[in-house]
Length: 110
Image (cartoon, rainbow, N blue to C red; front, side, top):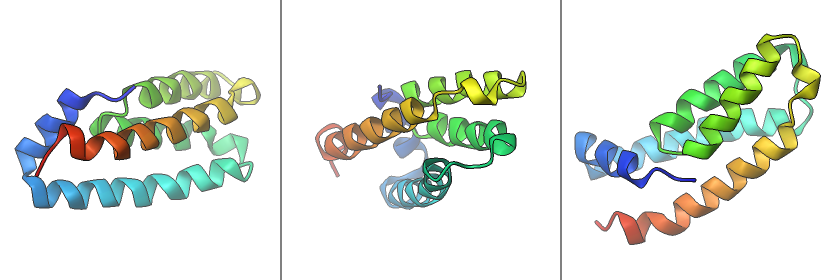
């Protein structure tokens, strides 16, 4: 679900302080899009929303969530936005975020 190697790599690249800022920014930006999707976002914008989430998720190691966003983005771009299981994608985000926050201290000590 979480690519801890990617997370460690990012933290090593930018340093612990900047990493904390990246995490905070990720959670803030993604939470806005996730909230919009939870409130039945406009299906015409679904591909763009999922594309944004996919990129953000890949950057921070939310591997499974990124994969699901990619699948949904592909469906939406092919005119099948109504078939995208947004609830399932958002459940994956919730699970990923919980796993990330729980494992952050254990896997990336200060």
